[in-house]
Length: 209
Ligand SMILES: C[S@@+](CC[C@H](N)C(=O)[O-])C[C@H]1O[C@@H](n2cnc3c(N)ncnc32)[C@H](O)[C@@H]1O
Image 1 (cartoon, rainbow, N blue to C red):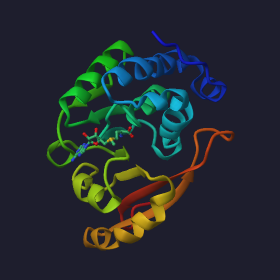
Image 2: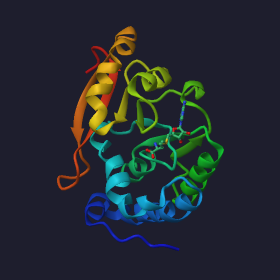
Image 3: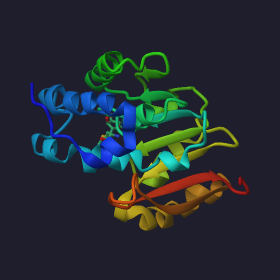
């Protein structure tokens, strides 16, 4: 089994949960690559590009939230967030069988089964209600809003990790947002003062504080 090197930023951020996140990184670097969910060239950048990028959403999620990760793939951003925040109740929504099997095994091995659930479904038909929807690399913002609007209730929000394309995607989604009486803002976020800044789009019903 490959053992990825330690990451000092993640070590500081995760504290006594570092062992669990490191185990997850090991799973991504081995089974994730074998099952074709993670490209072999990603192995050297799992910490910065995948774990810390996912964890950057942490400060935007209220305490005790019910969260759904839509299009979770190999568990990103849902699993790094669930490990970092034991107060969260997390549902990983993923329609593809191989990916949802991977998620079920990972959740079990990481001992997260009491508050992380895997649902094999598409966002549009998942039929659950949460406080916060998180998502990364799944669809353009306009499409994502259409797929997830029913999941985040009247008082919740969608947090989409978008990087450089965030402003353009908000502009392109203007019609879809106004039709649903949603507002969107682009927020600069990072997991730790010494990690990379990325952009998240927060979508919520207009007038929600
Ligand atoms: C490019 S992957 C991104 C995976 C992960 N979020 C990440 O950042 O590594 C996109 C994922 O979205 C899933 N997906 C596609 N359409 C979806 C839908 N309508 N509802 C939920 N998931 C969907 C795919 O099966 C795939 O696993």
